[in-house]
Image (cartoon, rainbow, N blue to C red; front, side, top):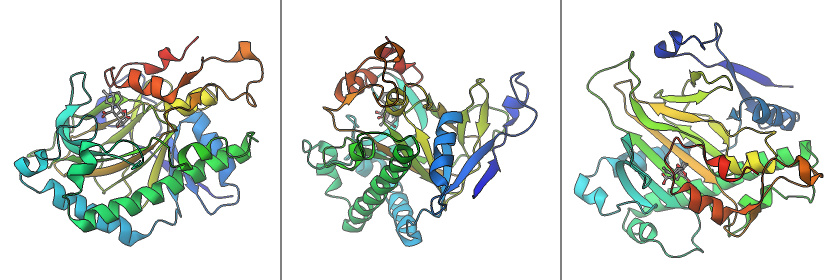
Length: 327
Ligand code: GA4
């Protein structure tokens, strides 16, 4: 059995918070090659909704190339970058997140992972990006799809979910509604360790699972069940997986979709890539009958992913969106 526990650190503003715990809370580190990994994945999804993945098999060169290409893109002039915007929701965006007035200290590119859906503006604009960037993004998205489905396969096995591939199929099929986000939090003039400078405001992800990787700049924080925020030490060679709202619903709340945010208190720029693995738009999302056979024990009603997603895109980042599913 290999589960390494890595401490997450409390930032100074949390230390004055009475809810702050005296000792750091560990982020489970899951070795994907460990035969017991599925047990640890399920435990982590139940307890924290978040874990770190090592021995993931994604090539180092691909990660370096993507990071280099993304850095080159963000180093372009503002006017060039804006040709790939505004995000609707796909495209290049700066400071504005979503369409309900959220702001953050970042710029980003949001890309649809599904080319079989309508030909969006982003994909059109992205066609003008250097061929290498496009190719690397394509390859990266395939790898992320693989990792998301691997994690869901482990969940299926450990929880004996029927029918077979019920969860993993949702993110594997061509119609999966997944997307890739590349966030660039620019360099700052000074460190502000005692302030809560918001790079990306607190929220949960609406999808099934999200797979995040970043450069070695800190900033990511997760919210524990007691409401306290803890910093997740960055690790550019690993991935972090978080549970999204749709998986919380399908497991009837057994798994928790984790609230997270990014603070920009450091001078160094942060680059992160997040793959949001979502189901097909027409897929019905509801507690799985193999987990909760009795209708009256189901905490959530059934909605299609398209219904939930449309609702989400009208909300503000910090809103509690799962109420839309509650009976
Ligand atoms: C959070 C997860 C993903 O980044 C995202 C975000 C989306 C956006 O940036 O357009 C949303 C946000 C996210 C949830 C609520 C709405 C929609 C911004 C926002 C205020 C791409 C997604 O799928 O949902």
